[in-house]
Length: 261
Image 1 (cartoon, one colour):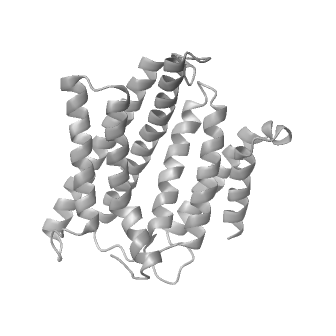
Image 2 (spheres, rainbow, N blue to C red; image 1 turned 90 degrees about the horizontal axis):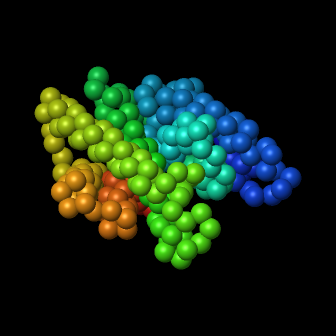
């Protein structure tokens, strides 16, 4: 809990746009990022718990997805300064750490040798699509400035809009590949497991998200979808994917108070 409090405070320092704190914002975000990773290792790894296994729930999964988006930002910010994005991610990091501490989920035994890989791929797709959504939001904002003729129109993140658009869809393509591998591995695990394939809420929403992302990529390559026409599909797919695991677990664990597998 102490680690969570310190990490959240560092994220808040990075997010609050006060002149006195601005010079510490980069270091605070990096410190929060490192402590956040340590929390994920301790919490999701189930270290110090009486039962062995991974601790899963909507809080830890959402926390890991936000951390992966922060990891993308950490690499990207070495090439392009992103002060506005830093504030958003600071608030997102603080919220993710708090949610993971308040709603830690249950410790579940590892029942399959493929389960950790399946989990890692699933959360990896969350992070990649989260990075795509972040860049799409910046892309939409830059396009609005371009239409209004405001300062900095035609550029975002210090790069031309076309370059930002290509970068956004690189994340979409990578996320789609990882999501496809996640679903394929889930099918293999179900085929060799005891319970078999189950059409539960997680499977249905994940398959719907996969279909939306597939349609987006086909539409972009075949019909040249760009701008808001493309980002709306991205937002819809990301929302479905969020409902597929973190959202459905939030409803079951928090609102209904039920344990889910």
